Length: 316
Image (cartoon, rainbow, N blue to C red; front, side, top):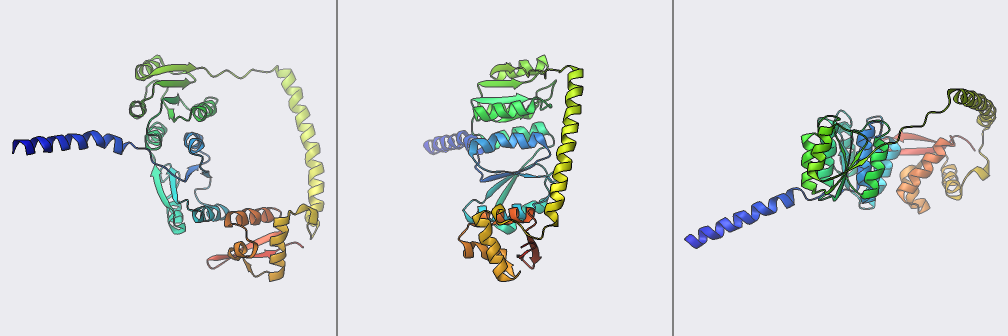
């Protein structure tokens, strides 16, 4: 009986020891979606996507544009299904999760009540360990350098308050086992002391922008304005002439674009976009890119018909 109890205790201890390793094992994703107009979230995400070699998808209008949805459909067809969303529902609404679900992709969301907590959660979710971490306040002029440094070291990017090291950030550094902490920009002595206690603190000061002579700057600005106006007038006149044309010069089209143009012309405006991969042998992402380019050139118009898109020519 006593030996059974001892055995049970040993098994329980083994499970408890193993739990942290399981709980903090890094997760892997095939793509990351983030708000492109929230620089902190975007650059925190970029530190991971650069390391993992996966796409960083930025959303600026709180929705997936049609072209992006098509790209994700093609991406999913290649076997990539796991998408990470960084940010709360106020930044990236649940409707985007529903879109991903309709495509057949699985989404996971990471967020916290502030940027400090979000950066810490991203670090603990996507890195199982990190010898180096990069810490910054996330101010203008510091954030880009901090993100670049994190990418160079394949390390997470953590955001701190100027006068106090957030508890979430401290926890992330401890769990990652970092032995080198690179501080970009300045912080209070209290923050520096806390970081030094957590690992080898390495201070990197951001160099101030060199101020130009105001008189030189004034002449430069005037010159740029005059030059810009001249370019604008010339390009406007040229553009007006181009837009009057009802056709596009053949040399302006690449071979793949011409192939799709020919198919649309043969269909007499009844060609479904989803039929193009089979007709051309192109992948769905490639078809989406070509159609997007032709639409930018205002050569092709795309109309929604039920659950599909129909293409027609707007110019010869």
